[in-house]
Length: 391
Image (cartoon, one colour):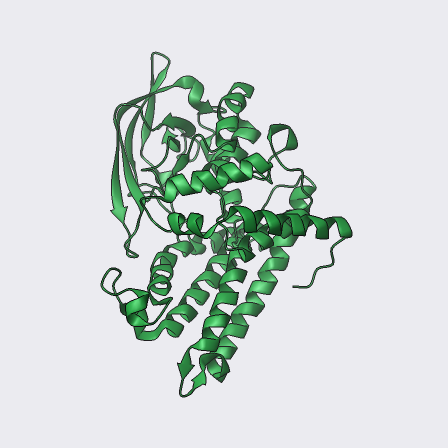
């Protein structure tokens, strides 16, 4: 994509490049890739961004936001991706923060936002349940009032990074009398509260990022309720539009560059795979889709800068962003060939003489979930059909 920048924006781009080069070190990247050192490394990286004042581009300036223009946000994400630097953890900084800023009390803003901003408290998301995923309104985790506290009982699943989290924001059922969407409330729960049990789920990529979370008579102060009882569905929808707005364009562009470079090196029939007409067409098709997605994301950012929240564009970004990610993961697998079948720990890249076979398999396997989390793509198509096409 060709974009013209002003002299000030070009100076900002150079500043971002220098910051990434100096602060996102190879050692930090190595520790982020290891489950045992991931959290410490992620917090270290986020604290560098916090110290620079760059941790929360989408927050209001008065609460620690950057005040960047659409162009500056675009530049920052592009340069972060080009440097291979990690994004921030989204649960507090991108998702919950939008709910607290929009619907939380001033006391809640003062209590929670500073520690989210500084990465001193980590959050996870308690939405999905064994019987309530795409049909989230069917959730059964209950919260009953008792002497000024909510007593929570239930079971959440697919909870990313719950084993690292200090707090969890949960959708809970506080009323069984109203329609199922109207009986849901939005509750903030300290993960150290007695009665909470976290059990790991090791996914098919061999890594532990997912968990089950069980609540057994967990007592939560009533002041941890966001907004009004029974309005949690409204707040959850606002949060999900922010989750679905994460199209991952910058990271996909970096992945595309990597795929193109590997395709120059992988030999098929005596020629680089990049010269294979069929592979090159597939690669070009994905690049065209990615360019169109980037323009759509920029339009959404422009609306946000005018104070307009993301609407049905979020569903479009979510669908196309995840489909593009999966298409690139399939291209990686084709590039890796039989090297993608080597089990981690059996042979190293030095043993096989192949650098990215293992990572291609991991990305492909974990990436199968991208069209499910945040609301499955089938659900997103239903939203578009109803609110855009009027069907």
